[in-house]
Length: 242
Image (cartoon, rainbow, N blue to C red; front, top):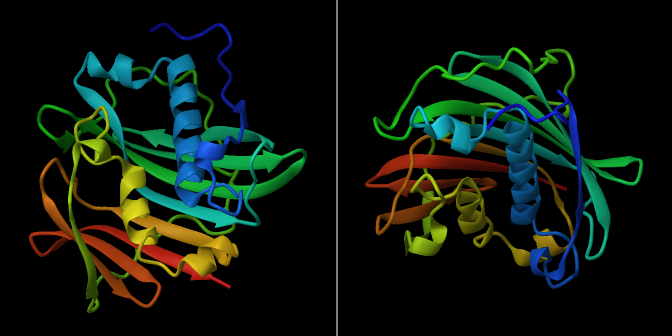
């Protein structure tokens, strides 16, 4: 698709929280928060001519590698929120994108994400084939107090769950959607802590993809979780709790 006449380097998009996105207490699920960020990032890519459809001409797609989310509080059912996003850096196969969620004029969530360009045929990273010079980059503007980081996964983990990757877990790139890893791990967290909004930040590292019918295990060591396949860690999650 060509670059939209409405394109801007900083995009804002409004959303209304619906009941399907909420926990039983009426507040937005952490997974749905990540979905809002992912959808907003996708919208910005579409109006800027670097969307999934554009990239598929070159057998490319954006794949999430690292993500940090810092939460002041969550919005609730029927709240109207605004997500703001911009690109902090984009070079070769790597890009850092920032996102913020506002309730009125109040910023309640900040997020920094690290993406890689992925060839869907070779299943390898490669330089972005599309022009992106029209996106102004904002290297000095951050959405979080801390940048995304590498989680220490060189420790012993207790296996707490096992599951098989199902069709419902897959996305358009034919691997488990990035939010699914978070969902699997949060299902192993004390629900009372999540419902009381004791989760103030979380860090996610994506290392390997998992696909249909593969058996995965969820590991836990205090506030760090892993998703593993054939004994190798594919995903790490670190929670920061009150």
